[in-house]
Image 1 (cartoon, rainbow, N blue to C red):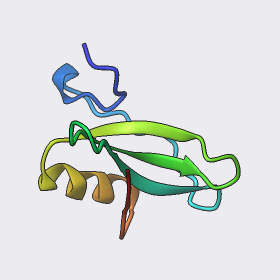
Image 2: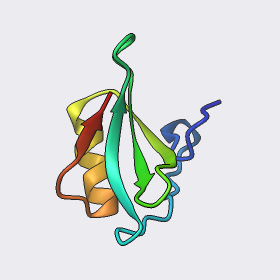
Image 3: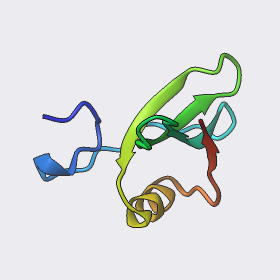
Image 4: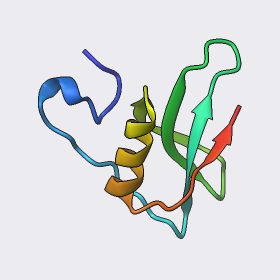
Length: 76
């Protein structure tokens, strides 16, 4: 069971609502483990919404295509 809404293990892919006026897309990366999670950071209060675990460059491209994102910042 995955904690992420976009779990491919269930055979379906649900998209999280993304509002580019209020949020920006970002990859959050752990400096300890190297784990990467793509999601959205609220521009006003900084809240991060996890959307997808990133395991490979293909996952990054899938995230970009799904949400129409051209570039991603990486935060540590």
